[in-house]
Image (cartoon, rainbow over all chains, first blue to last red; front, top):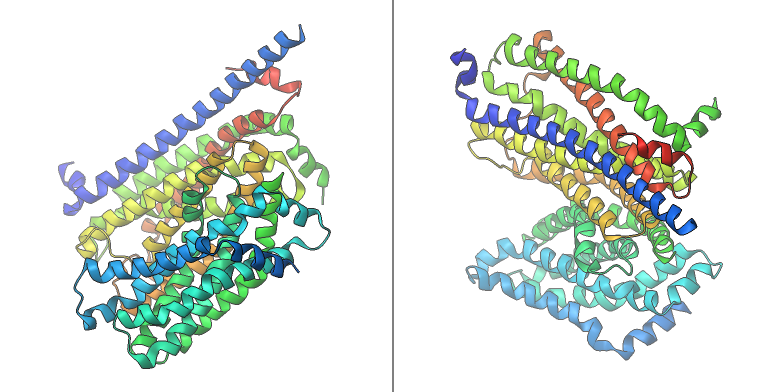
Amino acid sequence: MMHWLSMGGYWPYLWPSYLLTLLVVVLNIYFARRSLREARAEVRRRLQMQQRSDA
Amino acid sequence: MLVRRDLRLALRRPGEWLQPLVFFLVVTTLFPLATNPELSRLRDMAPAALWVAALLSSLLALELLFREDGQDGTLEQLAVSGLPLSWLLLAKTCVHWLLTGLPLVLVAPLAATALGAPYASIPSVLAVLLLGSVALSLIGAVGAGLTLGLRRGGVLLALLVLPLAVPVLIFGARATALAIALEPMAAPMYLLAAIAVLSATLAPLAAAAAVRISLE
Amino acid sequence: MNWVWFHKLGSPPHFYRLAGKMLPWFAWPAALLCVGGLYGGLVLAPADYQQGDGFRILYVHAPAAWLSVMIYSAMAVYAAVGLIWRINVAHALAASCAAIGASFTFVALVTGSLWGRPMWGTYWEWDPRLTSELVLLFLYLGYMGLRSAIDDTARADRASAVLAIVGAVNVPIIHYSVTWWNSLHQAPSVMKFGKPTMPASMLVPLLMMLLGFTLYFAAIMLVRARGEVLRRERAAHWIAAAAEET
């Protein structure tokens, strides 16, 4: 196991690369979902204001 | 007619148009100050220094291209005039180049010699910068059209234009380096010329689209 | 050619619903392919003859680099479609591409640099591919900067569309000029390793990762695009129901 983790001595380059990629993958998912959530909230707010002004 | 009008307006305020030129000279002066002023060493750096200075000062000059006419509504009139906007913008860019790019090219021999370029290389250096500055003006016009009227548009303009100017920089600097070394520079010159021609045909179209979008 | 399908896709409520339904079909295969590719690349594939285990960085570097270029092209195509046919959904799709494209360009740069360090001895060598990636990152940042500088969404859409198209035309030219420049100075270039003779055990995980990441991008893009489409719809009835979903 340790042998595999050490990746023939290249581990200081390999694992940070993989971790960075994983981080970016996760962050993209998070920010994309947040963007959709915010868009929905924005629309709700806009519709509420419209209804208030129509009333 | 547009050309005459632009020239007349510009000559009313010559100070503005001289600033990019002075900037160019200042920047080329910075290079020897920042390192070893020994001429043989400077000669190695000369192409890079000349081109970085030319690039930065043409960015500065781009501010002047559409700003006035955008503010006073002339651009809008041009856009609805019924004449093809791309041709009108090409004319404007030509005048702009005559007032900013050409002086830079004419002053370049001074800067180049100060940076150690041999006298024999000057005509070639002139030719390279001529082509390059034309290409830069054309490419820059697209960026100027896109950032028209935006606050802090100057910095954004630089960010937009500089990546697009990379090929011009690469071929121009290489051609200049060969010229200064008094070696044949046909290959990069042809490539630079190709870019200049491509810019002359495509850039006005993109600039016209950009200006129309910015004016709405 | 069934243009009805194309027109339906351009209709925002239809796109919104369709994107929602298609999402799991992209997301799950993406996850499976990436997990499989990782296992194949990190565990099963034998060490490279020249580079030992170091070559395994390829399995994240190559997808990132592929994504960085592919996403820019997709962005430019969406932008062009939006500009020419005035389809808001296309503009929404283009806007959705930028952040993810830029982030993976960054990943490509860092993983490329980390890969190069044990090979070249330095973290950065101005090799043509990494330098092109760097310029590509600047193009992405310029696109995002232009979008954020313009308040009006419609003008932002169209201006950034022009920029994306101009950028896309330039990318091959830039890449050619950078390669040309690099060949003059004979800097070492690492990234090709045994390409003609990459054994299947190495190649298959690579292909899985490339495909997996592509599907992942599609999923992320669809999520963002749904939000972007909502933002661009003004007084439409369907957005009320859409906004109520959690």
